Image (cartoon, rainbow, N blue to C red; front, side, top):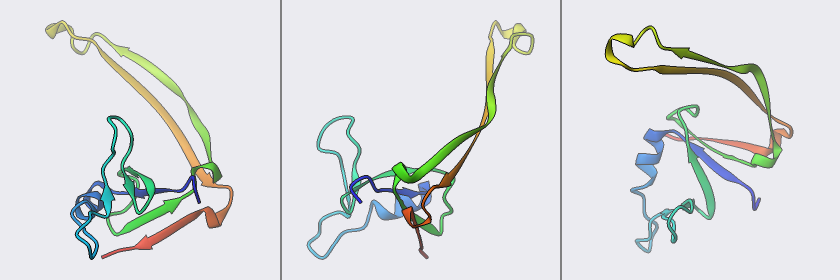
Length: 111
């Protein structure tokens, strides 16, 4: 459980960052040093749009497999923005994830 991380949506993060315990301490602890991640109940967290607003997930990243579904393709779009002396770069890649151990991902439904 040392490697466990929380995953939540931006909306859930906004709600959780305001919560306090019985002693008035925030449940979401900020980082004590610049650049270090904050913690939620002693575990790091990630904020992502890939988790529904009605869920909070605790997962072990060492038990999650990531596979490439489509190699990254890079396209330089110079004609589209030529009138404005601008160039756009479009990168497309697709990845899939799957837990190697189903017990490594715990989903909590919240309201």
